[in-house]
Length: 132
Image (cartoon, rainbow, N blue to C red; front, top):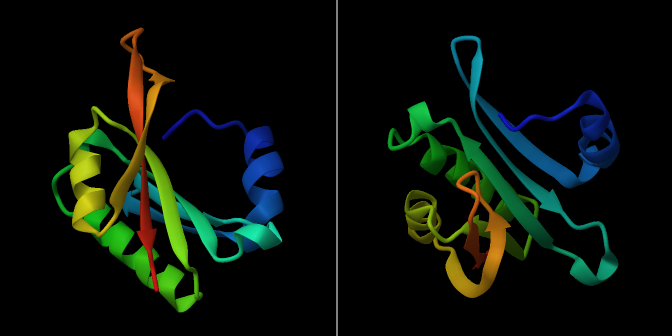
């Protein structure tokens, strides 16, 4: 999982629990996946949410991401959300394929918006899914 501190969790996530729908996948006693949608509290962004996913590399291509994303989309529809958006590094072909398989469309490209561990900048794709 990304290196989150207790303070970051308390200041970010825990103060906004009413706006977060999250799930965690376990394999034994280890967390191997995390996905969440964050619903914007701003009145002008009513029904709009952002998606965040993380699947441990040992659990890619086993259907975990598909299952977690399908459940989050189902919950978002049940909550009456209108749109889910996300940003993904363009080089992450597996994730882009998964999102497209689940109905997300590429809406734009942010050039050199992500600084990777390889010391280089990478493009990010903006993707969205309309739910109604």
